[in-house]
Length: 309
Image (cartoon, rainbow, N blue to C red; front, side):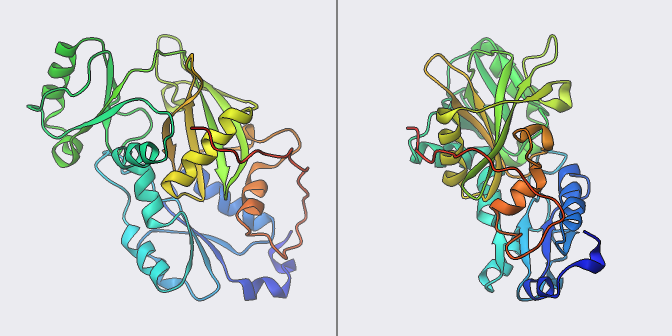
């Protein structure tokens, strides 16, 4: 729909402001796609929220910093906006809970959700709290950066010594997790406002055990299935995110939650046939209420909301 054809009522609803960086390709694409649907959408940095007025909606998609030592600036500004009564999706607390993997594990544990055993190592001199094989990763990490697999306890101790001068390690320590036997694939489930929008299987590149697309992994649309859908919904709810991708690993006893990503990249490869992913997300988040769109989305099959424990 051309911008000049947007109904007058839309202006009363305010803008939809995606809060994040243009370096996040999905955030930039969401804005362009939602504009095509007739929404007054805009991408702003985390420190530019002073431009919001009553009626605007802010969707937090602040990402992890490239150096893995924290979150992009703007969490405080999102919190202030929320406390002033602004409508915020993916609140500051939800973003922090998803990006800080130590917080994520604690919230998942409190919810009784299956996940790899995890522990925190504050310094390189700390004893390794879990037996090998295990994985060592930044508390704030993404893209598979500095995620290491250790087959022995001695290897893990040597790794911590090598990591001790990393800025992220000096600031936050490291997360240590038991190694779930790699299957060469995982399932990423996209959740919006308590609904499963779609899913994709990610397959690791040859010779690689991590499934990140940034490391050469491939993705393909998949049906999550009731058990995985329910687990993904429960995980997103546990960390308090309105829009998130939940990564599940297969095990003999069923899927386990590996991570919850509040600024994940996704595209139409995640949506069922006939469903446009960006529009389905906007509808689930309630952003298109009362807006006449130029496109129609096919009805998605019913989703279960049962919680897997």
